[in-house]
Image 1 (spheres, rainbow, N blue to C red):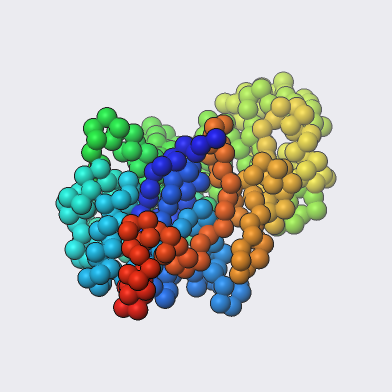
Image 2 (image 1 turned 90 degrees about the horizontal axis):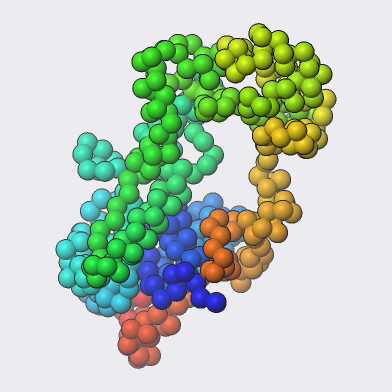
Length: 409
């Protein structure tokens, strides 16, 4: 059985997280992803946050599976010659350098399009054109400038970053969508095109409900944020769902840092909840019976649920609420996730063997295609596929040795 992107070739000039998360997704979908790296060092994350000396870090291995690696000195004339052959042979080029870096190598979009009119040239930048265009961007900077931090945390505390990498990996997934759209359009036009995603824009897109709420403030306070003061800006949401159905994280026994469960109170769920917590009279009490009546006392609603939940573990609470059709989910720690048998069975967490590191766990492909199953393979060693990739471009053994001797590869 073939893969969804079988036959598609990608030149991966990305590094760190945002770009590699995008090209890894393309590789999981079956594209031949050739990671181009600097000779001797490679992607900077190979050496960042190492837990084993002299071995590629988990930072690198968990973002670069299913790829091939070549090394190339782009500052040399011979390196540029190899690069041009590569560009002419691929369908997609992906990069996440700072603004203008690829142009300074001598390869603006116009030159790349001359080399390969069918090329899809995809880029991640921190910001779009304008005031912020030349600013450096990192994960949490994107969260800060895209609306996430100002609305995350509790009102009496500072703005807070989320553990989910919405700035880096979130942008990478947005880029995948743009690349696939351009690839599809090329089947009709025969031409490639430029695809660009800014990290700030990607975070902003993920924070659209907060912009919704900002505009709703003109017509009154936001009742779905329990106990929040009325102001001119959307408040930090704490653990409020911020959606049409109120939710909150309530504590469970034995009271550890992740002994919580998130509970949503749907209109149809209130009566089952009141019965479960031993307060069935509240299902009919006009002061509690309707969503409108509960809106001004959501903090008290969840306090009642928490009083009951503290007598049980989060798993017991999960089972009892689910049995009554009440949406809920226990707060799972990273240790619980990496050891979760169900996630392992689903391929959401997989174990991979590495020739230097040994066995380690990583995330599996979240996209499930019935005709394009994914086997997560290990990340490549630095330059592991030089001979294989460049040989396919027509370089013989003697030429490869000369390139190696000159420091080109």
